[in-house]
Figure 1 (spheres, rainbow, N blue to C red):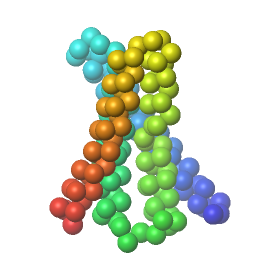
Figure 2: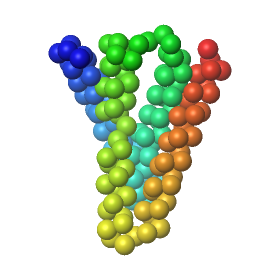
Figure 3: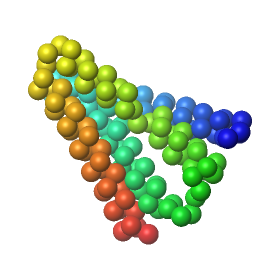
Length: 131
């Protein structure tokens, strides 16, 4: 690890975080407008799309890009690290639990986890179909 690696991760993370913020806010606003319900759909959207795209990227670049290379650090560690948001998912679930809202908490935990893993697997499968 050197200063260049840190800067590359930081740049990727900054871009990923900005994209996450814009998409999360827009998807949440759209959902609220369309349904009248407030739910963490923005977080779901970025986590699922991030899992799908990261799965595709990993599958397409497997054996071609070293784990510590600048491209890997920029995209995998930086961008997708900034774009997806486990901590927000965890806090949103915790808020439901603290409020005694068990059904939304369980639904959030199950839906986020299952769809994230499925999206990653679908991304890997799509990448194999493309390659």
